[in-house]
Image: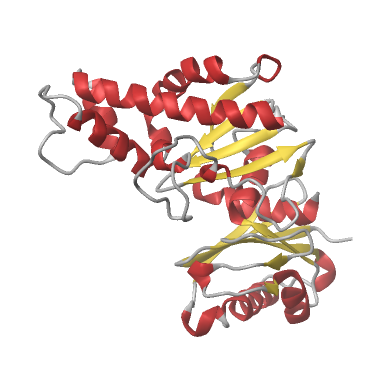
Length: 311
C-alpha cells in the first residue's frame, strides 16, 4: 500500500510539484520551468522524469506512491482528457493515460481551478465543508464547485466556469471568452478597474483616481482613504460580486464560498461589500451560507491535485 501522492500544478510559466502523505502533510516541493515550445510536447515527459529522479534520490519505490494528480489550465473531463490548454500549446489528448504510460504510476487529472477548490476544501479555507465553491478573483474569475465532497466537472470538463455567467445586457466590451456581460468583466481585478473608470466618467467629482492609470488595489486604497468616487466604485464592485455569488448559490446551494486571488487582499472589507446584493438576489433557501478567504495561496493546486488520487 502506497504512502505518498504527488500533486502537480501545471502553469504557463512553471510547474509546481509537491509530495504529500495520506493526511496532507507536504513532504517535498520543487518547481520546473514549463517548456511550452513545440506545442508543449515536453511538459509531461519533464514532469515524469523529474518525479522519477526525486524518487531515486529519496529511495522510493513505485509501490510507495499512491498516484500522481495533475492540475491543467484547461477543461479536463472525468476520463482525464484535456480538450485544449491554450497557454500550454496543447490540443485534445488524454493526460491521465500519457502520464501513466510515462511513469507506470496511477494518475488522475483535472482542471486547475477545480483542483485548487479541492485543495482549499481539504486543507484550506473550506476545510470541514463538503459543499463549497472556490471563487478566484484575479485578472479573470476562476472557480471550482464541490458538491458532497466531489468536484463538479461537467460532461466535457467545463463545469465551474463561473466567470462567464452572464450578468449584464448591452455591455459594449467583449469578454475574452467571446461573449459580452460576463461576471468577470465586472468582479475580477480587471473588472474593478472597468467599474471604477465608468463611475469616474459618470461624475465630475474630484478623485485621486482621476487622470491616471490605476489598479484594483489603488481603488480599494483610495476608498479606504475617504475618496468618495472610489467608495462608489467599490460599492458597485461589491454589487456585482454579490449578485454573481447569489446566482451560484441559488444553483448549487453551497455551505461556504471561499474567495481567493489578488482582490481578496481587501480582506473583510470585500466580504462586507458583497453581502447586500448577495442577500438581495439569492434564493432564500440557499442564502444561509458562509464566506471565507482562501488560505493556501499558490499551493492550492498542488494540494488539490494530490487529493485527486488520495480521495
